[in-house]
Length: 186
Image (tube, rainbow, N blue to C red):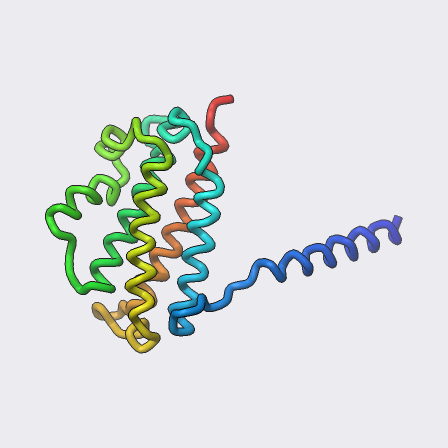
């Protein structure tokens, strides 16, 4: 039995080490090193969220498993809105215009208003909005360098931390999206 366990462990270790080579964080080309690394991580998370949601039906996109839950559509809109906020604040040094606020404010919060307003749209609607935001983010980050990335935007907060927050926010809500998907009715 000990030989079988050792063999199984060796096979598992070898297969994990081979697959890990495909999962590396590396700076994206065209960006400064630190920003490029952040871009790689942002794109990885977004890709995983898109992969797990792109084929949802309308009912699955809007599904609420209880009265306090958020739909997958609302969660993706929230991710896009959060990124749009940090985009204008850090990359453009401004606040949302009235027009931008009208589009993004409902997604910026996750509450009863969100549950009422963010429904009856296909998953593609939310993913396409996020694609548009991300395209603008990538363009803006490409124009910045690592000195800008380390610059303070407020006392104790630098641009790097702001974009780290966008990253951790995506990871957090990816978990919520997975939870909602696991609660979808059969």
